[in-house]
Length: 258
Image 1 (cartoon, helix red, strand yellow):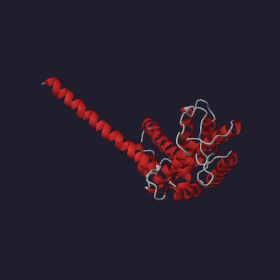
Image 2 (tube, helix red, strand yellow; image 1 turned 60 degrees about the vertical axis):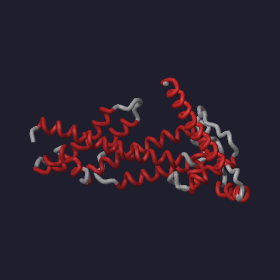
Image 3 (cartoon, helix red, strand yellow; image 1 turned 30 degrees about the vertical axis):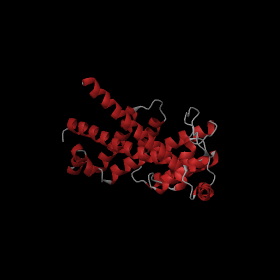
Image 4 (cartoon, one colour; image 1 turned 45 degrees about the vertical axis):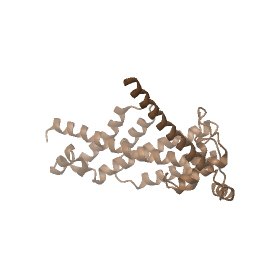
C-alpha cells in the first residue's frame, strides 16, 4: 500500500471508529439519563453517579492496549469548550499509529489499514479497545458534568425551572392513569421507574406508588366514573364530534354544488 493510500485509508478508518464511539457513548448516556430521571434526591443522584464512575475506573483498568499519550489527548479533547474535533481525530490517529508499530509493515498491516475491511477490523481487539476506552472516557465526562450540575444547582429531579407542564387532575387520577399504562404494558420499564419518571414530569412525588395504588383500588372497584372511563368518554365524544363535523361539511359542499 502506497504512503498516500495508507494515509487516506487511515482517515477513513478513524471516521468509522469515531462513528462507533458516538453510537456506543450515546447509548450509555441515554440509559444513564433514564436512570437519573428516577431519583428525587441529591444524595441518591450523587451516589448513583459515583457508583457509575467507580465502574468506569475498573473497566478502564481492564481494557487492553493502553496508550498514555492517546488517552491524554482524548481527555484534553473532552475538556475543550467547544469540543475540538481535530484534537479528537488526533487522539485516535495516535492510537492507530501505535497499532502500525504492533503490526509492522507486513501484509497484515495492509489488511488492517484497508478501510473497506472495517467491519472485520471492528472485531479485532485493538479496534474494540479504542472504541471501549473512548466510550468510557466520554461517559465519564458526561457524569462529571451531571455531578457538577447537581452540586451547583438546587436539585429538582428531572424537572427544570422552565418546565411548563402541570397536572390539573387529582393525584389519584394520575395514579390510575400510570397504573393503566403499566398494566397494558404500553411503556417498557418497572412500575416504580415509570411512576417516578411520570410523577417527576409533573412535579408529583410518589413516595410509595404501590401503596397509592392499593389505596385507590377499593374506591374504584365497582365505580364506573373512574378517570380511565372519563378519558374514554371524552375521547369518544371527540371522535363523534369530529365525524359529525365532517358530515356537516360534506352536506354543505353538496348543497353549494347543487
